[in-house]
Structure formats: structure tokens, C-alpha cells
Image (cartoon, rainbow, N blue to C red; front, side, top):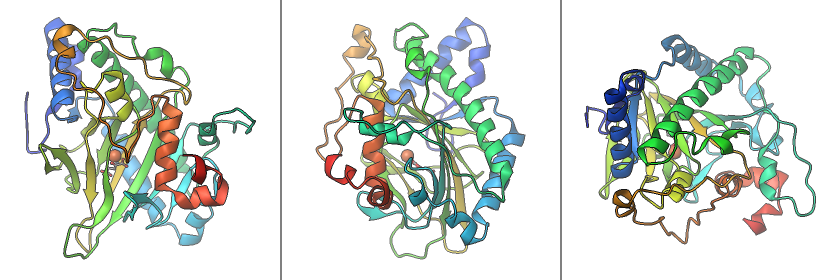
Length: 338
Ligand SMILES: O=C(O)CCC(=O)C(=O)O
Ligand SMILES: [Fe+2]
């Protein structure tokens, strides 16, 4: 598998446009990369450079807005965990992350709470958009549509690579729950690496992460060491979420990763897209061929991080951990139940 300076394998999605041998090569590389490392860089994905440039320009304009405009859409105003999280307003492993961000999801009508209704329906609802920056909504919608298409292609390739029909995962994405985050990590002066975002696994199905060209900071756990990842310009870093680990009994790995704060006087912007199915979906298990099953170690058991096969439960777990202030302001009862 081609490895480059990015530290993780680099895969070319345009191989899927080629003949049967090229397609087979892509599926082989995909299976190996996500069994062995859980992370790879994706080139040849077809997302236009112009959209990527517009997204970063808009992200910079958003973070530069006067604070009162960001406070007007602060996440504590949203029962659905949308809107702006101020610097230091998020936690991983119980410790404060040094980043600010906006969280964006599917625009939906809120589901009224009712006895017997699962708590995770609070995750559905409208976004909070900054009035002064209408282009953010446009760019975000374009980004969501493009990345949904890339993620769908990848999932079909994975299904085939694992011996299942190409449409194995399609049904649970008929009512998808995409999640887009635009994050800014400020420079931090510290003796030890500072926590941009602490070590974690992504909770969903798969993540397509865009990082500003040439920016370091992402680290991926490999054989007990932290590997620095700098993706090629314009590439997406792709990684497995916990639900895909569950669906493959651990054959595909959800890998620990973190972001180390950039040096003082610099900053780093990234745009992770999390491809998620319906909140009440259980990702369908893959019946692995014997040769792959023999290499499936089972799902990671960690008492500090119980895994839930229903997507909404796993997502809510992560939201409650990361945003205790939103829970306290909007859903205090959740502090006792999740
Ligand atoms: O910003 C990054 O590079 C990674 C962020 C991340 O891992 C996350 O938000 O889940
Ligand atoms: Fe992550």
C-alpha cells in the first residue's frame, strides 16, 4: 500500500472509476488500511478545490466575527448541540480542549419529548447560523452534500471488500444524521503538548476530515505510539468510527487520535465531517468471510467508554461527555441517565 509523508496510507478514490482490476485494488487497499491502521488519506475524491478554498475562507471569517455575534449562536442556546462552542467549552477525557468550533447537522423539526421516547431524539433540530455570514450556510450545505456522496461510495466499497453486497449499509442511511464541525485550534505556549482535542475514538460510522494544507497537529495511535499525520494538500483523512468496529466485530478498527495545539502565534483550522445513519439505526453486522473473521479480534471493551450499537445512543453519550454545560442548561436529567 502506498505510504507517504503523511504517515498513514494514501488511497485514490478515482481507482473506482477505472476497470475491474483498479476497483479491486482500491477495495484491497481500503480493507488493509482500515484493518491495520484505522486511518488513511483519501485523494482523487472529486470534491472541488474551489469548495475547499471557500470553506476555509468562510471558516476564517466566522472565527473572526465579533464575539457577540458568536455568542448569539452559542451552543447553550440549542437543545440540539448545535451552534458555537467557545474556547475551552468542550471536554475530552474530562479535560478542557483548546479549540472553538461550530457544530452543524441536518436541519430537522425537533422531536417532542414523550414518555418512552429515547433521549437521543434531542440531537435532531435546527442549526444556529450567524446572521452576518450567510455564506456559511451555503458552503456547509454544499460540503454536506459532497461528502455524503464520497462517504456513500466508500461504504459501498467497504461492504464489497468485506464480502457483503455493495448496498449492505444503504438502508440505515435513508434518514441520515450528518454532523459537520468547523474547528479552530489557537496556538498555545506550553512545556508539554497542549490538548487541542484529547485522545478519543470517533463514535459514529466514518469520518472525513479536512485539515488546512500542510498543518500538523493530528496524531494517530499506532502500536502504542503517537504518529504525526499531515495529509497531502486537498486530501481527506478518513477514519473508522465505533459503529463500524461493532459491525465488523473489530476487524475494522476505530483508532485513538488527538490534536496537539499549534505553536504560539499560529492557528490550525480543520473541518471534520461525520457520516451518520438514522439516530435509531443499528448498523447492520457484516457476515465476514472465514479468512477475515479469523482476524477479527472482537469489539474493544473499555469500562470508561461503553459502546452502544444504536447510533443515537452512542452519539448522545459522546455529546453529554463533551458538552456538560449544554446538558446542564438544556437537559439536566441526562446527567443522571447517560
Ligand atoms: O481537528 C482535527 O484534526 C481532528 C478533530 C477530531 O478528531 C474530532 O473532532 O473528532
Ligand atoms: Fe475525532
